[in-house]
Image 1: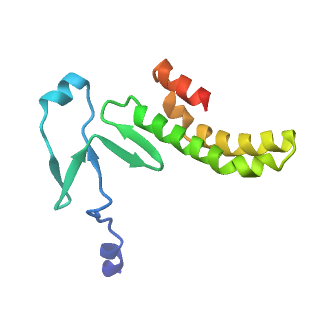
Image 2: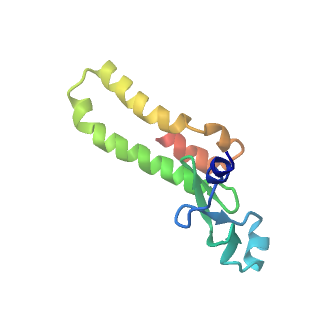
Length: 125
């Protein structure tokens, strides 16, 4: 039983573990930390990290996440173009709405309070 408990412990994976410092621009500019030790491995400190498909930046502006959502949405629209042309108008609207709205709806509660310019980018999609 003891062997089972020790084998079930979590371990950090060097290539998948990410670290990020959070703070205001002024504070982050004063800090020069490039890597940290976590569970006996060295992890580089990044300006952005991805968790469950959401991209967080060190200032929590969500700008990188919005850019990724827009990029993904426009890519899907481009891929749907040949299919949509062969559908009736109502069917085309339904297909486009289904593909784009699922990208916009995923974790959208994290976008509460983001800058208006970022919301406009999402709305243009």
